[in-house]
Image 1 (cartoon, rainbow, N blue to C red):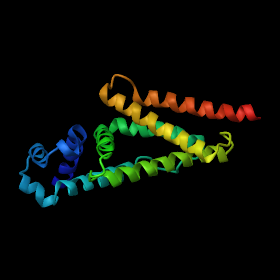
Image 2 (cartoon, rainbow, N blue to C red; image 1 turned 180 degrees about the horizontal axis):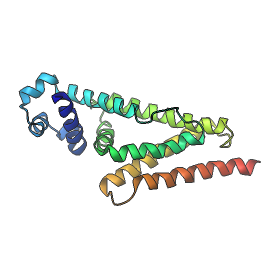
Image 3 (tube, rainbow, N blue to C red; image 1 turned 180 degrees about the vertical axis):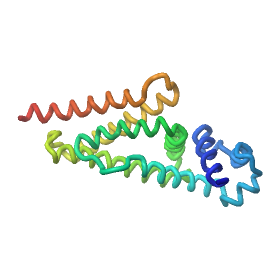
Image 4 (cartoon, rainbow, N blue to C red; image 1 turned 90 degrees about the vertical axis):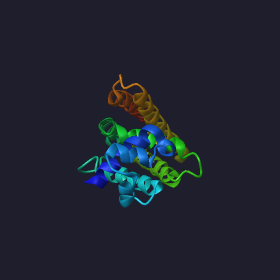
Length: 194
């Protein structure tokens, strides 16, 4: 129970202040334990960060129950991902903050963030390839697929950042508009080739 409270508070502190500025002392104080008590659960600040990232991965892994959608439905599923992020603002803030901090090669989360982006890029490319193989999108060259996948990542990260700075707009609706525009644009290529 206490370990879970520490992880939850670490998500909030690292997400708000970043890994470098967020302190174990601050996390301990906000949970209501001493730094020594916190050290009984985590050997170091880096160990705590690794556990926070594992926690985020395991929580995110269970986001969508049921069968994995394919084709255009898999691309539309990204809107549901935004709904998850709205409900888990701390994780979203943490990941975007770490994404920037991890551009420093010495950052302890660098390998995690690099691998996460590579995995996300591959996953988005796979969604696009699925829509192509089902005839919903026109064929694209491998470099075009990579470009479209990068564009999806950039748009989603950018909209998430804007929402974190000003949550007056509906993140899910904005992402849905972008996704539907992407589907329409890539589907028109199919129609024009017919």
